[in-house]
Length: 312
Image (cartoon, rainbow, N blue to C red; front, side, top):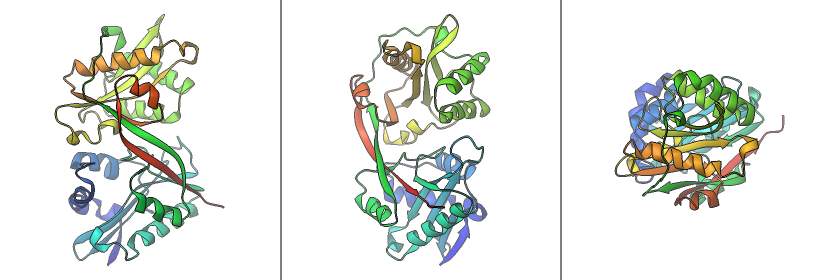
């Protein structure tokens, strides 16, 4: 067996990794090459020093990809395990343990005090799929703690009686207003995702908004297809027949909450996606179970979120 820096071999072995993934998870989480390229190869947050690929001859048999906050926008003391996978034929030989141990040592040496499973920028999962008991036990033996549970929801027959006006679609010259709104009231991650969207050529049309006297008081991001980027709520679009759309994140100005604007913005976003021919709509990484069920969504995946705190 030989261990390589992922940075040195990522293009050479990317096809093999996609095949390996789909052999293990493809029926449930079908991975396409464009998604892997975006999330695991091109993302600036990939930590080249902590990420490794294990090969036997010319065959890829194990991989860990770690991410750190490249822009100092999130928690600088945090590292993410973006992907950890071992070919089933080569499991129970210590490959996964070795990959994880060296990755942990690398990021701790660089100042990380917390390691999180998933949840990274351009992530595949917001945690470990809840039914993967062997993986969860394996992590707990290595000091990881289950700290939360989140779910994905889907609506396979979405409906919306709302009329969508031009003013409900963000224009490119309103992006500054959106950035200011997100920065003032929401997480830095949502602002980062909005900036990424425009950086990669987005026009603003993916954002549905509600305004009062010209100011944004509610927003909802929609995703469809692969341009300008693949949103996490359409990661698994090949799992569905027809066109899959994604809704989220979304938020309402604090002074306008409890006025049913959350429901209103989802219905407007639904109309926006229906107008583009979407057949099913996916919501990822949420704890708002009752809210989405009331809108006709059903839970499709649940994830347990794990992290490990390192004493420095």
